[in-house]
Length: 338
Image 1 (cartoon, rainbow, N blue to C red):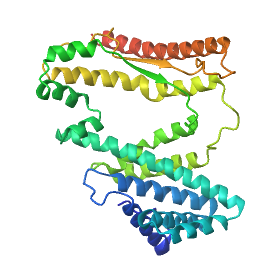
Image 2: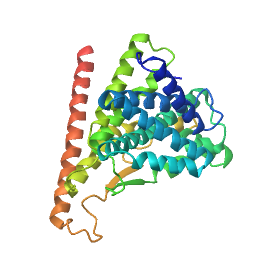
Image 3: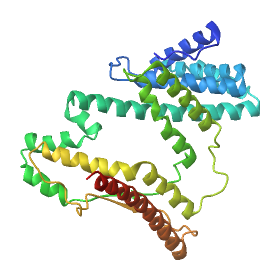
Image 4: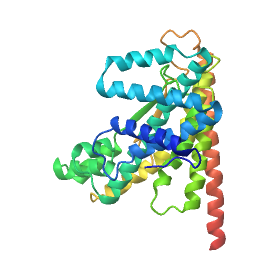
């Protein structure tokens, strides 16, 4: 279990122990060695409460903790008295503290979701190292292409050639949309993505200095996220929505899709297919609903759709130009070596 940051005395240790106990009530009773959800969640909560205390003082930190603990007790026991107690605690707050506490719980939920995402990625890597997908459901859950292809060949008795032919002739069209339920701003999403250093804190070969530096980086990102306004103060235009959607290409998709396609090639080799998926095979393609919806939105006009398309093409061209520039330097370096 992650310990608290240095300094703060026995009272702080007791408070963190109490939080740890509440976390353990909210997760499955049996947690394997490979399941780091409790450690991730508790560490993020620990660091977040440190940030909250530094910005708003001990009293507000303790109030957040008390609300958290009473809510956890109600969730566990379904005791209506606890729900009434929580209501009284919240209604007794002054408006300023209410805003800070509401914001604190919003960020705690974001951090809990992040901890779960990191834990899923960690568990998948562990299973891949061990070759341990115990059952069909686990392979599906982890979206492992190799396990899927092996099931098709060995369990469903499809020939490798049939699998390869079906794979190279199918298309998965992923459609980007700016749904109103997506409440997390792009700036917050970027800060959350930088919190992926969390998993490195539990690496067995990490040095004490590296661990301290990662821990400090973790606290900086948590503080930056908490101090970022969660609410958009102006209504986004379709062009803004497209920029936000394209940020997923910059941050994730641009590098993620080639990695996935290489994983597909490796999986095919492991079932006896020594061909790569053709480069022109439309295995994955992307579409966008942003700036093109015709469901009654008066702000989406033909001119807006044209602007959004041009914006997307410009961003795509920038990505390609940057990649081509990198390849030019790599090719020149190889030529000089020869």
